Length: 210
Figure 1 (cartoon, helix red, strand yellow):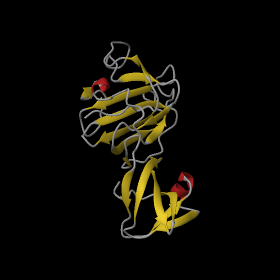
Figure 2 (cartoon, helix red, strand yellow):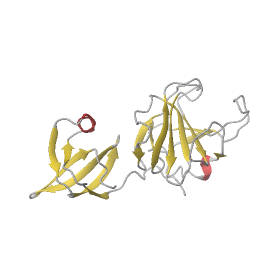
Figure 3 (cartoon, helix red, strand yellow):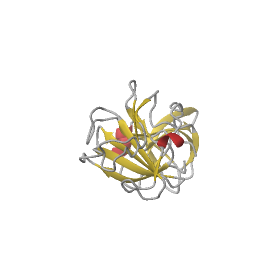
Figure 4 (cartoon, helix red, strand yellow):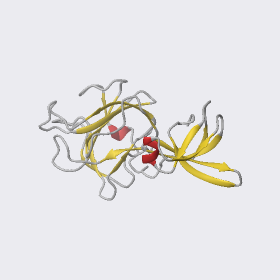
């Protein structure tokens, strides 16, 4: 399976996979890359968050997620501790954070690792990220998909902040009502749906099977 780039713009490699050096294992466990135009980091594929951590000595602020094809992906040295809790389902192109300079880092960059396992472990089952990530595929964000409500009424919100706080709803979708999901932003689903003779747009918290 080939993954999209974790960046939204063109990036460049600064440190190669398994380069020998003054690391704990004697070599570099992933690859380092930087993007000069957009520091946003997004998911390379669909998956589930399995680990998040604050500013440790080595990886700094980082996140690990298990891909649908049973790999583990690590993003390290992020600017802020990721807000997504363990168990959160993520979609390809969904924002996970921004490039940072936390932990054992000498400049803002992304350290990315891929491991051939369901549970991440330091220096275990390492794979070369360049064998899996298409770095030129940085525009392939979430595309429009069908959405269908479950058995309860789903509140609709105007902003991501309101959706997360579950306040100031601007409407609702009925049980089993269908819509189109056009984006996933910070775990909220942006929908377009029909309301009488008009088309409306808003955020919901429920994935609707997307």
